[in-house]
Length: 393
Picture (cartoon, rainbow, N blue to C red):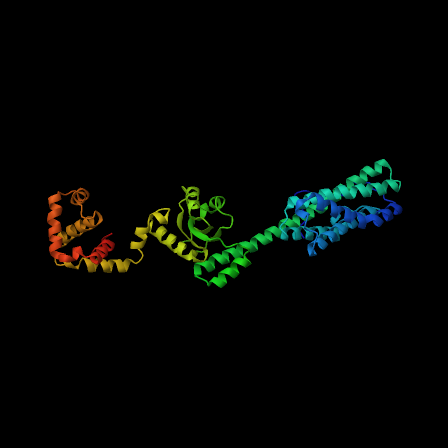
């Protein structure tokens, strides 16, 4: 059990508390009622606990309250106080630590837990002090008794806070591992059933879309602070050891602009938003854009991505559509290819072609005459024009 903070353990030898057997018996008799009063006060005053005392967890909390009060009474009843609480009442501290872990699993915060302890201390002290006074405790003894009560509460609340922190840390590690596994399955193209099951195990609510963002490892922390907390991470990328993949939920539509703004200057490459089970498509496009050095937003480079999707096929298409020029001298074929490309992109506007190529419009007319001689009627065929545009684009 981890129940120490930077503060030293509670030193008990400085407290001069003497409870007579009669006072101890009187307090022990009312402990069950005090426990119920503590539970009632916590339920009424701490919103996070209003529904917490029903079911198994409620019984666990009630038991922990009883153990804490009983542990204190055992501590205050000894003739000579030990040096540390841990050696005096290990069951109470173990119970407080376990309570903290259970509260973390239940989703309640450390703040709510410590508020419950403060209220419990106030309610318990009211009854404990009354019984001590009824038993004849002197005023100076009551002061020491109060100091011991609140020191005890500090100690067990610290044990609970440590349990809460340890459980959160453990749960966080496990959750991160499960979410990393989900990201790997998304990239591997797992079945919808496998992905749904992995999402449930990772306690990850599936969004409508996921957007792949490829970022340098040095930028991951600062970028994660700016995006959806449910973002998935994956840093085991083939041939991309210096980059991490983030899969950002629901960054489509207007939210994409916000994402792009958050990534300004981060050397990140952002893919398209895709249905979450199809995140692999977004990643593959992002990866291709990164390798090609196209810039940060793949949506601004769709033409280049389409044209570079199959380089070999494009080269074969280029050779096929330029076959009519194959018999010409290389220099002539190069000039005519350049002119044909410009003519296609400018939709036959001669002056614009001339301006782009820094030649006279009459030269454009002459070259187009050569091209029509080589291609014939095919330059009026939509299918041929499409093939030429793709090949020369």
